[in-house]
Image (cartoon, rainbow, N blue to C red; front, side, top):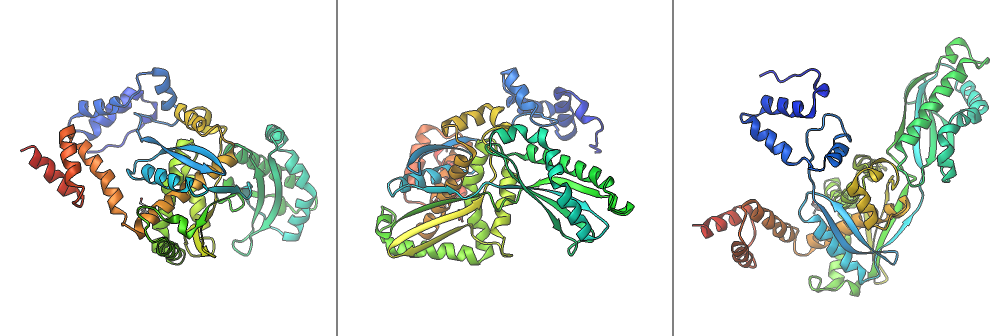
Length: 438
Ligand code: MEV
């Protein structure tokens, strides 16, 4: 069957659904019903969601949960998390509770600079371009005044701009490398608008620069775009307590636990196969809060993984040590987040999530997100180095299977009892349900 289509975006939502249903399903009316089941009955709310993207056909639900008891810099937070993986919120909550009685999390924003670049081609002498740049730099920046005015009122704007010579890596290639402070907004639109204006002014000014030859006057702008690599927009999250204080029900020998924990982190520092999974666990926490607060998790992911590989090898984002009987576990990561603009004022659940967090500034949100990542990493390493990860995972998984089979209250009771001393596996749960139902 040829399922190519022209003019799909021009079809109405009903027509789009009908087309999809007819093209891909043997029972089109069932497919239509499934898609429509997720439409919101509040027409205005549905329209809001429809308009976030193109060609919307329905809403895709993800659960939103809360991990309470996060003590960060002496203040309690209940952290909203949006994620599909069953054990993540429970693990964050456990970790938060554990550290709340051991001094809580400390978090510090180390810097907040964002980067954008105009990539261009100049066919001439570098020294000539440099003296042109020195002469017109202020004019270039001034040309963005109407864009930066409001941001400047909030204390942000363009912080610096330099000309970078990249000709050893690519012939005739230069950059305007621009540093921004975007305050409480993530700032992608602001940065890109500034860059496009800088590019335009750069091109126009070069055209009238008398010291340039005709070829030199013809600067070719390849592209103007922010960078999601933000090595100077860094937040640090940390927990620390004496080794003895680590003791609890599942940590009978705290010294042994601390040593194994440090070894586990060290392995992730030196071994990329482990580092990727280790950092994935950190991202479980980070992405979930980033999503709940309407931020761009792809940008955050790209920036953080670049940071993890900054010395040429992909390594653990977190670090741990024992020094003079004190256990310390910490992480410094780049995070470009916003608490104003974008989805933050549009999506009702994002607004609600930010309210639950006490309407944080972007810097406060950086701290909360980094702490959630560290908490998640602590929970994973605690399980991995003690009971193993499957115990907790399978308990949550069990619940999913029971829901899938629409288990009754009595069945749930019997099954919970059985698995108190049996290992959970998908097959064993299904077998038990089927036996109970015989
Ligand atoms: C699962 O989503 C995350 C873990 O694999 C992380 C880790 O291994 O550290 C448990």
